Length: 168
Picture (cartoon, rainbow, N blue to C red):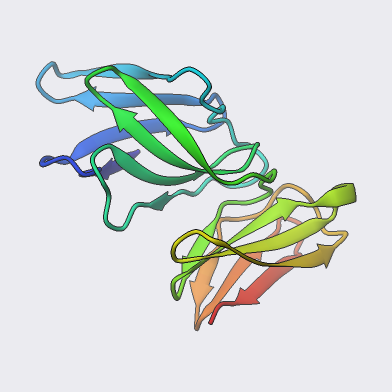
């Protein structure tokens, strides 16, 4: 469940099922859930490589939910409760391996690079691409949501592997 204002005057409640790619909106006046359908040309919301985690918009414009991971990359999610639709705008077009993390005005994602190698991709606070770092032959699924501590983001893996990065 995702609850926030999304740039609207009142708080809204969304339910996202990333394994099925379904987004629902709670209508408080009608006291029922509406399934939001993707606008034409919108990418699929599905994500199942690792634990799911999204990043809320810090200062949302009307309808802006936040950043969501998908199998195709990192996207900015927008909702339109009137039309019962949503759309995704690409932020990082690379297959995500784990949920994104944000620390010290920088965003980081684990992505699948060329030849199936794990890559740590970074973006600045304006979501402009930053440096990318090859991580080698680490698993391409099974990662935790990132944990932020002491200026560092860490992703833990089911098999005991760990990928960390210090964001300045």
